[in-house]
Image (cartoon, rainbow over all chains, first blue to last red; front, side, top):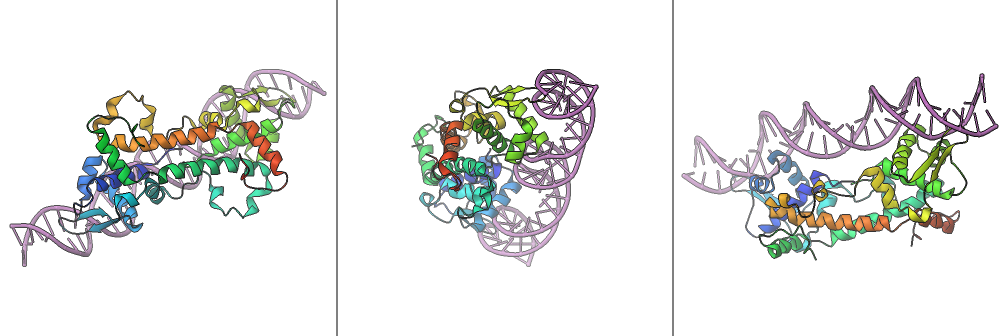
Length: 152
Length: 152
DNA sequence: AGCATTCCTAGTAGCATAGTAGGTTTTCTT
DNA sequence: AAGAAAACCTACTATGCTACTAGGAATGCT
């Protein structure tokens, strides 16, 4: 149960863009350098985020990426779902709750309830944190690292 | 971000044992059949659970496995941690919080706080559900499957 | 003795992750 | 117009993990 680099790098890149919100296009190269991510790899991730509508890009010299909404309106959950797909710990949660195909064995239903609760919990945490929150956290901590203890 | 079959099968098998708690040793074969898990594979998982002290085994004919504690005293979190390792969504959370090696970049600290919050949330849900809770849920739902909606 | 059962070790196919590589197109600057 | 800087796109690949399979050894009930 790990978050992949897609998710982590996606959040890092979006956070980087949020920190430079309103400053015009930010080049992928500079994001990659600040966040220490492979440029080529990050390119693929940005493409995913662009297709999902969270960033817009400008081509050509002096081009780059910028958020397509305010940092307040993009949550970490939005980004994770875009990069890693739906937050479902087990595939059977993807099916409709009305679909009783999975109920041949009552046991599965029982454990299914556990995974559903965990997924809800994860989602609510991730959805409650916006890019703006992350930027504010950064300002609060100044140059002393608190490992995010101040987050809310 | 998925739970592996190790975790799922582990919980399913432990739930199975909990449903037969007090009935003497339960054979791996019968667990595998009820839970529809490969016998050989489940064997490896049971070995992990045995080493962790959650089940005890009796060898030879009429042997099998049984819980080594009451169902009330084993949580789903215990099982998941045994089968999948510590619940940390990113590796940097494994290091001591006092260890400031990871703080060269404040950005990492910021996102680190997010992952820490999510991990805490997952842990508290998983730790709050015992095998006994799962058994009770099973009884409540009878032969109608509610997909775990009654869970607490 | 015979059989059921746990225990142990070694393999393996398939898949996802985390990239690398290299070329094409667009657009700004000079 | 030339050149450079950037996004865009596609294909390839190494590595590691997952989810098994296979088969034999040890143990202990009947």
